[in-house]
View 1: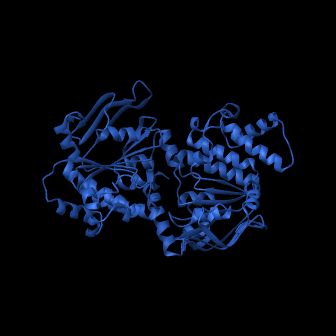
View 2: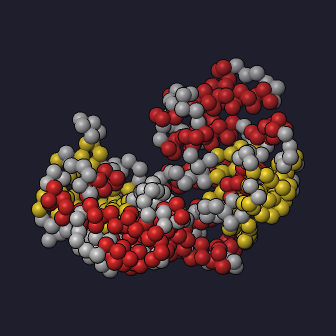
View 3: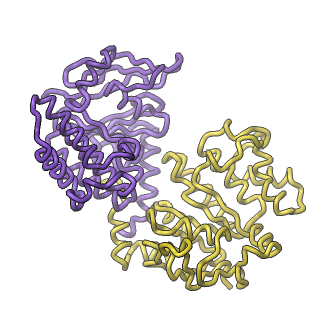
Length: 250
Length: 269
């Protein structure tokens, strides 16, 4: 059974423009999925649907086979425990007035997970290579890359099965970016990742499967290796051709 | 060959803290120079110092010569005359360069008229409009006569950056400074804008100072590159040489990181 499955999912704001149209996709445990699209592709809306923050206008979203119902509180508690998220901007996604220990422990509190909170926070901080004394400090004392590690620690503290990451390295410098990639690679031994990004190079480093979104539709999906080596859809081809690479000076 | 821009031993300080230390670079006509650096490296401050627009409270020392004139210590009035004529700048976010309440054609027209006054001409409305639509066509904006009536919010990000480039071109500058000009754009749009910049710089024989954190983008846009780290130049040379055989450990790290992303999609090449 898929962890999450979408069948013929569409989304429109009111009677307005259709943002997502007929989305079919499956997230399988143990296979990282990259969702690639440019602005206006609907990738952020798709992420909101996957997080249960919005309901599709039509179609069905399943979580472990059962229909995802944002109105069902006990179902959603189990869902939130299993599915966590990390967002693009590590400056706005951490509460500046809270200590790191409280920020990282937040999912444990809000999901009422009975555990040794201090030990869980310490373990999460260690997994993202932050020193234990970070727990007593505030977000402003950390760099952008460190803040993103804190956000990742918060996402994994409840030991979720799935972490959705929205443009998590876009705001970071190249050298910081590559270290976050290494961290995510290590984490994906325990957790399945869904990476939403405009950057096909980034998702290609981490994902076994790819979904290419254009204007609210999936134009191509499948194993990353196949799509990268032989892109079929003209949009995927254009995306790959446009992605700048270091010139080959050899 | 005359340098359009010559920076020698530029240092910038704020509240006693050094932000840029001893940076030297030059750009000649037809030359495309890249300035690479991560956040806080001082690359944008270097560009702002070159056009005399450092934020208040920052002090610059050393020498910045723009079209042969010293910028450091010059009065605002002296530098204003150089902006536009000697140098035009495009920034990362075209929305901040455009007036949200003014139609795009009128914004470009303002620059066209200002340049005409500088040249001692007073063109008719029809002449100005013809030049505006000509410039818009030059930067490959579709249906210029119609789009000239659009407000910035009615245009896409790529169209807005093209409009900002058209405004820069309207000045007929000899040097173009582009500070992260494609960073806010989608990759497919970025590729188009980079191609446009390349064509314009070549055809107008402008000098280009291209500033970016993105190595592959810089690699395709320039011939010579300088690497800034924490306000200091750590390496410079022809782009092929620096990217093929980086010498400084910092550049080595940057190039390796960029190659890792390239290799991930390498199968598609």
